[in-house]
Length: 228
Image (cartoon, rainbow, N blue to C red; front, side, top):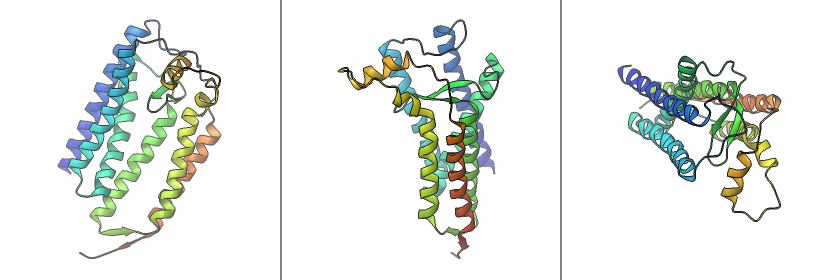
């Protein structure tokens, strides 16, 4: 319990740092308030942002690796950490700059491998599912349970994740210029400075979430105990 509390405090603190960086960027790049399309940034700023996002994922996995004792529990702590970090990131943004005004505000969610766009409620829902799955994996490990039907549950959750990710990146990909001789990274940067997200596919998102939940339910329903 004490270890769990310390880990949760760490993930919340990470969220505070993440929100601070974003607040600084918005004050510098969007003094009149955040809006789409994204404003142009110097290459060094873009490279730094990409590196920062990659470093965040590495940090979450590293903490999860240290906290767990096998792959299952390490992955569980990674999921829990990611979910807590993401939810509290938005909480801290609201506390300091009163944004988002609603859970349906559009945001740039991530930049790797392509920009992710979506309403704030979408990553929050996914984060809640990640926390639930993570806690279940920890509970399974503590209760000496074996998960059966891993392949089916993994396929369902994997398909759900693909569908959800497509709702974040699909419109951006579809609207990428096809007739251009520019390097792909330059093309993506220029396109992001023109792209304005307008219509989020809540139906596709719901399908993805249902697939993920079905995978989790299938996992819950196919387990048995074992003795050390």
